[in-house]
Image (tube, rainbow, N blue to C red; front, side):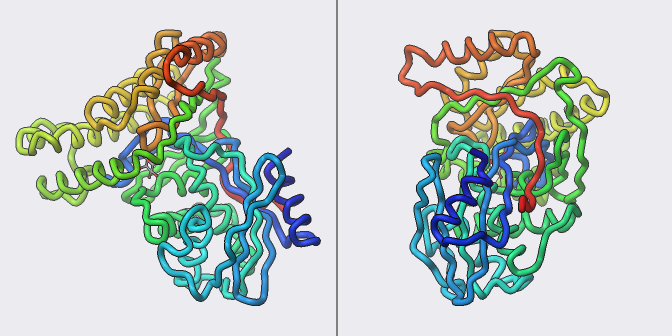
Length: 393
Ligand code: GLA
C-alpha cells in the first residue's frame, strides 16, 4: 500500500474523519559530493522514490498530536505536546523531529501554527540506512504545518530551499544533530529525472538531467543494514576538524582551498587535519567533473569518480566501515563502473553505477559477499531520480 493510503487509513481510524490534506517528502541518494556540504562546497543528490507521507488536520487547542503508522497499519502515538511549550530537546525521540519543525515555524512566525495539528505519518524510507528518512520526515511535516496554516508551498526553488533550511534548523537546533543542508535540500528541491547540482555556499542550483537508462545503466543502492546513527559523534568530530583546518589556513571554509593550494595547505597543517582537507578539496573537484560529464551525456565516465570518492572517504576522511567496503569492493569486482559509500558513513548505504546487463550479477555478488560473515543481509534496489516534496491531496 502506498504511504499516502497508509497515512490516510490510519488517520481515518484514529480520528473518524478525513484529514484536511496529505503532504509527502522523499528520502535522497547522493551521486557524489560527500561531507562537502558543511564545508560550503558542492553536492549532487537526487530524490528517491521512497517517501514519508503526513495526513494532517488543524486543531484549535494549540496541541500537536502526532502518530506514526508502520507496515502493519497500527498507529503509534507520541505524547501530545503544546506548540507554546516547545523548547529544544523536548520532546525527544522520534517525536523530536516533528516537534522541532513546529518549533522553528513557530519562532519564525512565517505561518500561524499556534492552533496545533493532528499529524499521522507513514513512510517507506528505510530508517538508519543513510537515505535521509529524517529529512523526509522533517520536510513532510513542514509542508503539512505550513499547508494547514494556509501557506501552500509551490514549485519555486527559492521557497523550497527556504523550507529545507527551516527543516535543517529543526534538526540542528532542536534535535541537536550537527548535519549540513544536503538532505533537506535534496528532499525539498530535487525534481524527477534530474540530479540537483547545488553550490552550498551561494545556494545556486541547477537541475542536471540524469537518464541512466538512456545509456544502458542503472543506479544500484546497497543498504548494508548497519545503522549509521552509531557514527553520530564521529560526524561531529570530522566537521569540527574541517572547521579547525579552515581556521588554521585562514579561509572561511575548506571550499576556499583550491586543488592548486592543496600541497601548500597539507605542508602546513597538523598531520591529523591534512587528510580531511585533501578529501574536501578533491571531492569538490570530483563533483564539478561529474557535472561536466553529465552535461556531456557521458554518465559511464562518472563511475571512476565514484570509486575515487569512496577511496577518499575510506582512507582520508575515515568514515567508511567494513560492510560498506565489502559492498563497494564486491560491486566493483562484479563489474560495476564505480561504487562508493554514501551519506555520513559508518554504515548506511552504498551507491553503485552498473550496466543493465550486469546488474543482476552485481546484486548476486554483493549479496554473496555478505554471506558467511557476521553481517546482516544487505537490501538492494535500483533508484531513479524522483519528485521532491509536495502536496498529495
Ligand atoms: C549526512 C548529513 C549531510 C551530509 C552527509 C555527508 O547525510 O546529514 O548533511 O553532511 O552526511 O555528505
